[in-house]
Length: 305
Image 1 (tube, rainbow, N blue to C red):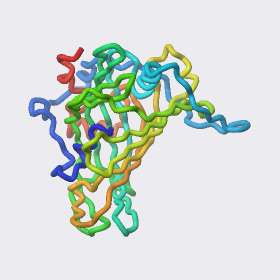
Image 2 (cartoon, rainbow, N blue to C red):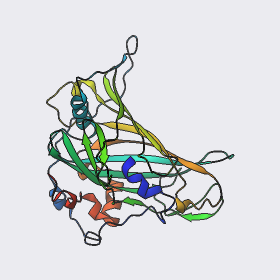
Image 3 (cartoon, helix red, strand yellow):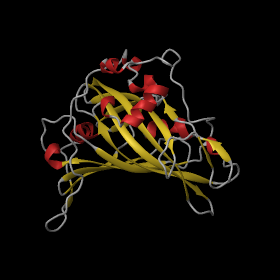
Image 4 (cartoon, rainbow, N blue to C red):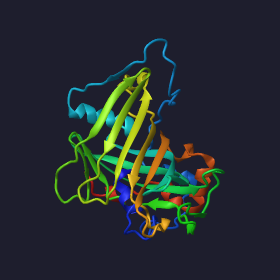
């Protein structure tokens, strides 16, 4: 998510909408055609996230033999440890206005997806590319909305869906991550900690933005899967629950004027096996408004590997 937030929330952006190439725009995709991309491997159900310990809570850090082992664990949890796969994340997040000297105000909820594909292009190197599509919902009713009142300024503002399609892509390797548009070859180091919490394996990740990004920005997440499934090395695609938060500048559509401050958002969600598992209300909205985003754009992979 970090690597595409720049396009959504930069103060220099007129709108959080980033259009897909015109050749894709408006293309109707029947449900039967959604299987055109490589098939998603079915994952076991996520199961209960928590259980009450009989005695002292177990919480201990996990250790790995080397960075390749960490990469493989991350791929199993966040994505799929295979040469090529689609990965779909579904989430809810709530946005808050943190204005200097004023009470923090909740603003709007969003429901969305991050749909991506990865392909192995070298030894322990994976290229990933995807997009996000999120629709605004009222804080209290949960109904889809397209306008609201800014609780700080009192002005009526338009609230657009956040459609992010210009992610430059990412390389994942033993040393960390590297955006495909980075002009230098170094990878950004990872800040992730795997630990066991009773029947769960959790990975806590901090994503520090690269040099030259807008400020303030930081993102952190907690991601988990049942330990019994994690311990089964035959499972290459683990189910995953996720929650986290991030800080970023005021988006331009919020129309904050000279008021200083920043936004804060917190999300929760889970990894799915395909668009057929999306909640019906979200699927119906996306199918009606952005059907092309219910499929991964594979053009970025035409010459990869």
